[in-house]
Length: 88
Image (cartoon, rainbow, N blue to C red; front, side, top):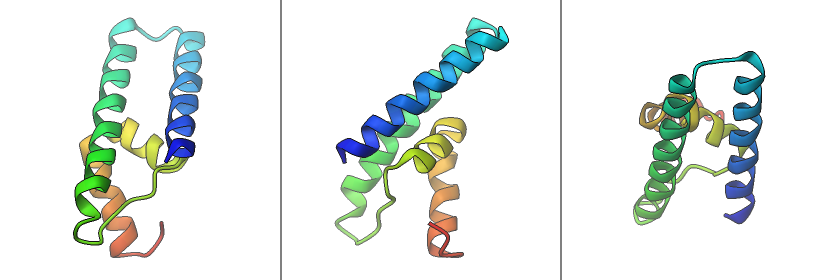
């Protein structure tokens, strides 16, 4: 669990640095960071409550990135990929 959290933090820091280098606006950066935090927290809550029913998503750099970019919809995308297509 700590490895996934560390990977998520590293991914966010890399993306923040890339956005800074490209000169994106502060509004876009704040929106992405907020969306990432909400998505990551929702991923952790989903894993906590989903474990009761045997449903979970691994917390790694890929799932953290997808959740960070797409937010709560990213969790739905990951669930579809895992349980319908057996990708994750």
